[in-house]
Length: 159
Image (cartoon, rainbow, N blue to C red):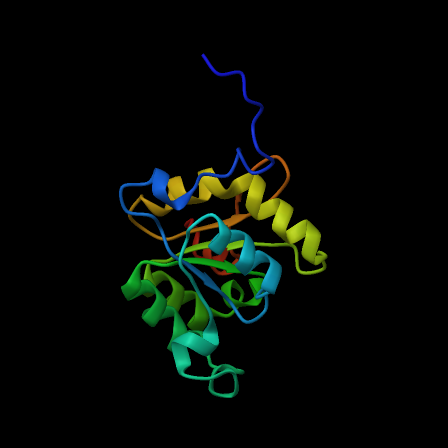
């Protein structure tokens, strides 16, 4: 029996630990090289707006109604910071139609905090990705917390 101590990322599951590992999409508001490198280092495929739209210039400012269906069809997990998407009715409707899983990082967070939150929450994020239907969670040090968008509260339903 081995008594090897766990590696610093032992809490984060490697992509190979899933039968079909989820893929991630880093929204333009949360893309950082360190978050991307962290996920890629664990073997996950990570996509960016520049990749989705052909170039960084083409991706800048693309409406959520455009990229959400593209990401939804591919089944990618969205990591973002822009909660405004859930405050505008037309964008909220695009989110519901795309049926994506969105994990929100604190908008004012530093890069190291973003990497830490993804690290702490990765196993749960991947578990949510295997479920059908859309969902939105805020990433916290205690784990993902369901986020009920204002548009959902107005209609009396959850995302």
